[in-house]
Image (cartoon, rainbow, N blue to C red):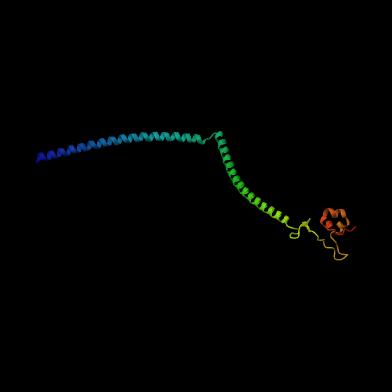
Amino acid sequence: MRKTLVAILMVACALAVAAAAALWRKAEAVAQENKGLNERIAELEESLEVVRDESRQASRATPEAEAQKRELLRLRNDVTQLRANEQNLIRIEAENQQLAAENRRLQKQAFTRAKQPAEEFPMMRYGAVQGVNTPKPAEPGAADPLAFYRKNPELMRRYFPHLVATNAPVQR
């Protein structure tokens, strides 16, 4: 029994040594991996510093870069303004087409009316209907607003030709 116990203990020790060796190898592998990761972290930190330095230098823009930036902003504003103007142009062209159509319709209507006989459509001549005289003063003493012009036939013909054309009496 003792030999069995010794044999079991020896096997147990051998297993313990083998497990310890396996753990030691695993620890070595983890240490190597850790060392590689630390080196990679150091490289990335160096790269980060380089990028930070470059961004600091880029943020300190040169006057040329500032001028280019202002020019780009001005051009962007111009493009925006041109787009707005284009929209206004489209709206105005549509309105122009509507007005042109309305104008053609009214011209056609006026042309049609001009073809009608005079009996159907009384024509106006210089603001007064043809054949109608202006009313005379009711009484001889009442004020006549055209008295001055009636006394001056030249002014009457110039300013009131429709009254002269209807043979209204001109006083001298």
